[in-house]
Length: 418
Image (tube, rainbow, N blue to C red; front, side, top):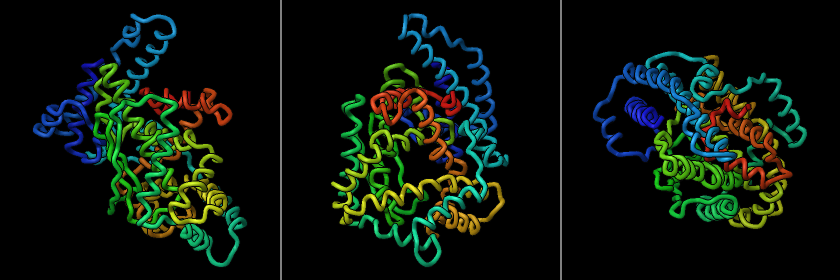
């Protein structure tokens, strides 16, 4: 399988010559990247090679690699090898789908997400979101449109620019403190935080290998207090930084599997990465623990009234129920059912996004298209998978155990339903 895996890595690097966002991270042999940059292979040749690798992988035996171990270790390794085989095949299929898209093929939103991310998000009618909005109307009384009342409330909880660094440093330190007792990270692991502008996303983890990341936080729009822990967990501990470090340690270095030295962004791996990063917030903090830490540390650091923590998070939890409205807006916009202006209006009405945030979100749709499903559907599938294996609120140690096992495995999104 390693020969197939090496050829897969090189194909992903070849794709990066046609799609600058495709290679999210790479820390394999530098000469492979140089070869791809020099060759600049045609999309048709990349596609043909990918199909040949799929055919070759279908002929590979899955059981042989586990033949030298015994008992429980053998069973665990056999599962890992099986998952690796399925992972490589499905990643290659997604690569071929991206080739078709770059060659001009038009896929619907759901066809695209299935082809690239091995999953399709549920479709909800407007009435589904309207029922939630009606509930919010009752819980947030006052005059004027609900979006105006909601935005006026949120603006009371903005982190001042001159306090962002302190607030994020506190959040990162606490997320790391809560993560380290449950797993062993490489001693050299670390990341730096940068504050940037002009992006369509709110935060991004750039993994550079050798257990190091650069995390960027977009400050184009005001940052509300909940984003401190959300981004610290999602991008750092136990989210993307931990996920990438464990894959590098456990699979690339310890097992010598080269396919995990590269991360193809538009692939099934992204649903696992984003889903675990979002669910990792709940793994690190129960609701009560989060509110207590915010009250004790983050609200004071941001210059906000700690007595209002419960008021803010009761509201935040209600708004969070509208997250699938973003998927619905993307589906309608990318399918051509609505234009940008209508998509912004839809997000403003049904996702309660301020117009400037809704506009930023449509720019994300332009850049990343159906990738949006990886955040909420990914979280829901990861949560379902871990809880079905005993990792519930009532058993946090089991939840951490299952979460860490998932972080260090090549499981596919479709495998989360098993």
